[in-house]
Image 1 (cartoon, rainbow, N blue to C red):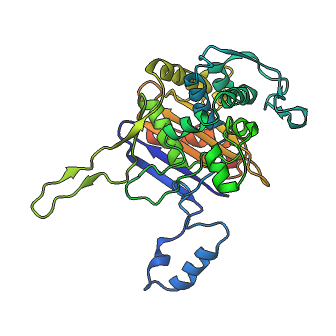
Image 2 (image 1 turned 120 degrees about the vertical axis):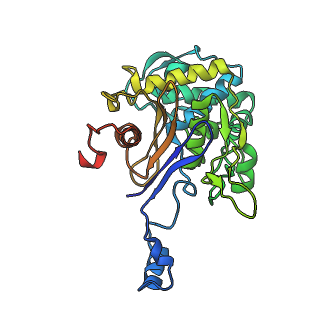
Length: 348
């Protein structure tokens, strides 16, 4: 019904492609076009909001793609290393038996390390990490999310965008008039609760993971043309910041994201069988009542020398591995002129 895609160049932050659906005919803004006024009015009143640029202005719960931030915060807190083990039994009840949370896999994932929890997307492992971090410092986890550029504008040149939301004790008191509780951090551990992110923000984050840690400012401007005696010049590449991960820990994260699409236990491995270019990424299935969950996939290609960083979301599309990962694959196939061998999700 609706969705968006953003494709960035990891080494510069340039926007190579951006799409928002449903769309509209630009001629509705032409006052001389026949019946443009009526068409414009219809677009403004359309409940599907075609005039909203979902790629930059749409904000959504992040679901499991937010686990990149939880993973980073856990390591930087000093409470965890990538090899810290957790025993996943399929349920998690540290908020009390009236607030039992369940993993997506019945019975859990068994004894897994934090880095393996990214590969299999174990919810309870990240609930537990958020719970423990919040017990030490309720602001540490939210502050890590802001270091990733969330809760603020990317500063994308040539775009109107939304900042989204990173909940924190201060934010909740100011916006809801309520105090922060441990469950707020736990929900944020898997990108739920009050977390809101845009596809552009998540494309920027996965581009930084791909390029070694630099958050570039996205831009639609390629170059400034010659004029008034000045020569043509490329538009300057601008840096917003660096991911708060050491090179060693970033390399471990990259390996986990490669396993998501290549390892036998990866949540999206089955969607990339036969693709001649190796990719890396993360699935996300964000709860969004009352309909189906929002389906996310963020990733980059080729995995060993990234040229593309891509974020895909389908509103109320279901599971990220089932519908957004195949769209990510199709974008890679189109870019590298690879003949597609799998149908679009809606053609199955």
